[in-house]
Image (cartoon, rainbow over all chains, first blue to last red; front, top):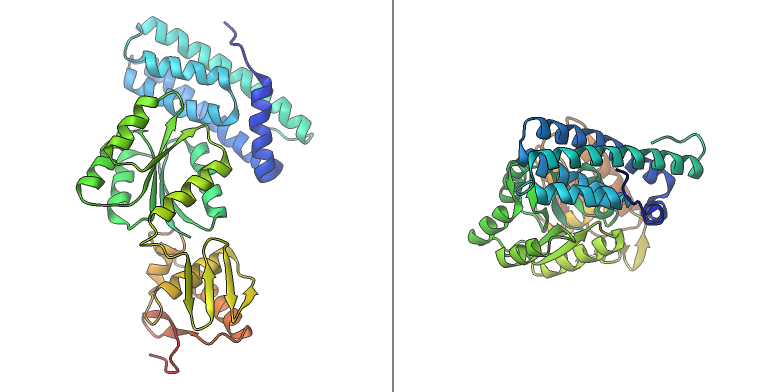
Length: 125
Length: 228
């Protein structure tokens, strides 16, 4: 299921970074964000596979911070759902949320790469 | 110009915070998990602590409570999600001084940290001076005999440290820890190079205090004529 994304909020987040540190900072943060997404979604999948709710909650919490800073609001909502739901949701529900979050992050990264290309053709996150 | 500990397990947020605070000429240590944060918070004498509450390995709140129980008054700024009002209440009740919600605006972060460091005013003097050499922390500038002197942020931090410890021998390892962000000796002459540059600028602007090398010990900023 696709999440409702707010591209304007995401562009505003990138613009705040650009105003502060220029395109080099945007690119650097995009790289860190990309690495963070890969690391945390991997932890989430591992946590889901092992039914380790502590790992899932912690990974979702950390990823929520990165997503929030980049304006990835739909991903933030899913991170929050996993973080909050770690104590209450069923295993199946948490696994579904993990899949949705991974998909949403992949979509956001694709959007981010496209945005970076418009900032500076040839740039890739 | 304060020495700060940032405890944040998200690398991107930690890097943004580090950049913002370094721009303000602060020295920043980063901890990414509970045990590391606890050790750094207790071993070093920080001017301010910025804490994410939820950390790998434990809760930042536990460290805040422990610090306060030990009588540590270091100002503490909590970093929390805006969706976590309960964390804010628990954090402030545990002894934190302020909080900042994530995602944060860089200018707001800088202002909150300036306010945090000001609360430590008894320990952090805003204007430092010796013999016509003045460092104004707020405006990040140095004056020699009333004239503004262009210094790099590192030179400014170095000069501030020397003025704070005027007429005392300051060791290289102390400078590495307090001015650079090293808790180990990198095995380079980075301190000597910066001290030499600073000394050269002091001489160039006819500063009265002298930055002397104390053989086998370190450096001293002194108004005296004799080399110790």
